[in-house]
Image (cartoon, rainbow, N blue to C red; front, top):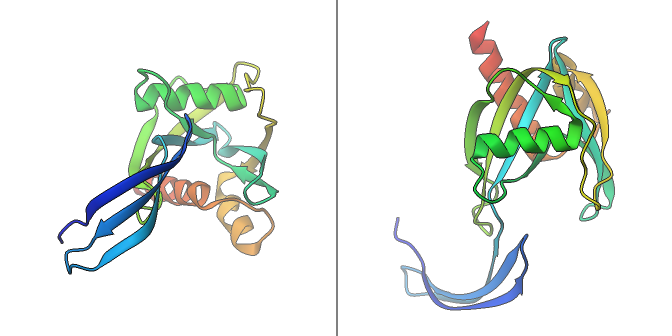
Length: 183
């Protein structure tokens, strides 16, 4: 497929976390769109973290966009010159205090919402994690750790017993597929 041509681009917001642009685009058909909004985020990493007892290590935190609290897999952006693997290990350690002697397993990387966002999320599986540190949270973070049996998580989400977001659910499904191929 042919790409759209950006004729003009104006930054509406430009922070370290997000850049929002209004673009005037010309489609291959010749049609022009004068008000297309694109958001540019840094790439993210997230991790399905499992203990030796097959429990998921989840973080519960308030999300202002949805004005509610959610159970999620640990996640964040890669900082500085970190590799994705180093970034996910750091994020898990900071948010949960958990670490593993095993190398994180990359389950894949995917665009989050390519219609309007530029970033990808890379999902990892961390096995046999143990709590070895205290949390090291940013000043804006208020994160509570919860454990749920890995096998029960998907059913609890489908029943509406717990509330999560799509990136956590897709991470769980990727981990489930990976683990079922390993058994």
